[in-house]
Length: 91
Length: 235
Image (cartoon, rainbow over all chains, first blue to last red; front, side, top):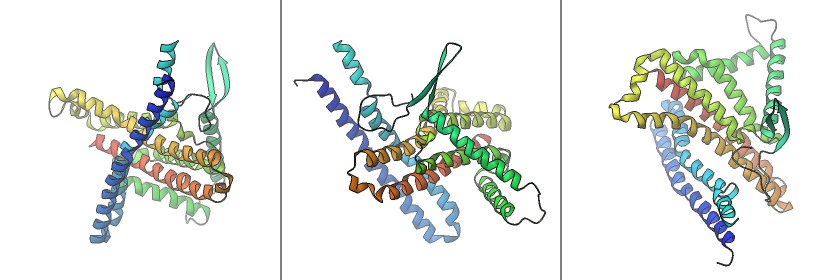
């Protein structure tokens, strides 16, 4: 650790990558929603319209956690408060 | 500036400041978001006035442009009636305006504008309007029953219910903002960091997906979720 600022920035980048890992679980959840919706549509084609709108709402709800992870990653990379704290601390 | 402050980095997808107005000692920053919002408002107003003058002679049996416009309004009314019910029909004009504004904002990335919805200020303002509508409609239709619903099933659940209520505009605004911002960042990556051979044809596909498809889908999601929240408050 020759340069503490570089260490802070490296940790910020790694944490941004970890925050984006929740995309894995978000995608699995959205896939389950889509699979169930398609199965229901195949079973009851006459209810396809209402199933489709319910599916979109479910997908949007499931997407929320992925969006939060993305925002955390963006804040870590471009608006990181830790770097400012470090710079103030070092004067 | 919005969520993303300035700095020296390679990527440029931020909301930059165009002018600073001094009004009574208060600095008002005219950012790119505000400027692009004006452009979109101008487009929508000009379109609305054009259609108004085109449809001056209202015909009993519609044809041509009037037919198309009536179809648009009827489709939107049917969508609102299906997902919201009769109680929400007076809000149809508001939701049509919101739908038109968000949709034109989202697809404005195609012509090179920075979408205003890629700024949290815009989406939070829209979500705050939804939040106010939820409260107003809830109190209007259920009176004290709506206030009482915050204390159910027990009195001590009030903080939880309050947090759940306050989380709605936040999640609603972040969903739209995050989706559009992700598209903006990816387009900035392709335009500014990719080698020049990747800049033929590939941006067109990405624009079609991120701006047109995701823009239309997120507009629909925003409106459907707003309608569902308001419907949940009125019942």
